[in-house]
Amino acid sequence: MSGIMSKRLLIIGSNSIHTYNFIQLIEDYFEDILLITNTKNEKYHIKSTEVNFKLGFNVLSSARKINSIVKAYNPSIIHILQANTYAFIPLLATWKLNIPKVITALGSDILINPKKNIILKKMLEFSLNNIDVATSDSLYMANEMKMYSSDLDIRIANFGISHKDYIEKKENIIYSNRLHTGLYNIEKCIYAFNRFTNRYTNWKLIIGGAGDNTDRLKQLVRHLNLVDKVEFIGWVNTDINLKM
Image (tube, rainbow, N blue to C red):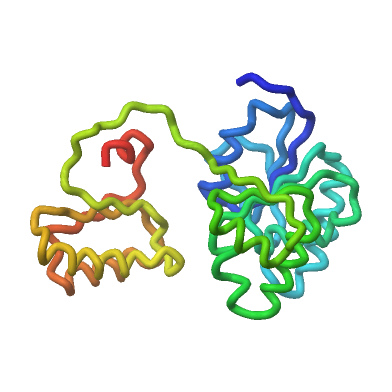
């Protein structure tokens, strides 16, 4: 990968596929990368350290730990993935340090969380007012971010897509590959598909992924008599995703 090689990148984010996909996307641009996360993932060979990012009595101790890690690692850039406690606690720890800071918003951290209560709103305002650059993958979310920091320097960017061939002729399939949690409202997709299939009977709903709500979603499919039209396939690789 071409480009000017930077020195050290400190990434702060949760133990999620979004974090590791991002690292794989940009790792060739840096000499060294350190990940601060909530739980190490041995599946990925990435230098990482654990910190408690829960919102509670641990906030100050977690901030002190991050401050020590940052001073010891001396990164060229700090890049934070998700504008929730993964931003608030590290920025509480580093806002006085003269290190460029970037934050990438992922969705619910901007569109849902700050509307829940005043504490989460103030945390977001603090975070967005103590970074150098923010990124968003949509103009809509960028405009929402401006509501919490009017002077925010924000760039529209996303993780990109894989350059692979795809099949133009596809079956009549509706495909979901999101995590099975309340955040992604997959049950609403199932209810909508139930109405849709009353008119378009030759379509099928395929649900990838897994999560805490998987059993409940399967029960809903049985309740709506959609067993022959809805298939749960679990986690799948990129090649299978492209075929859907």
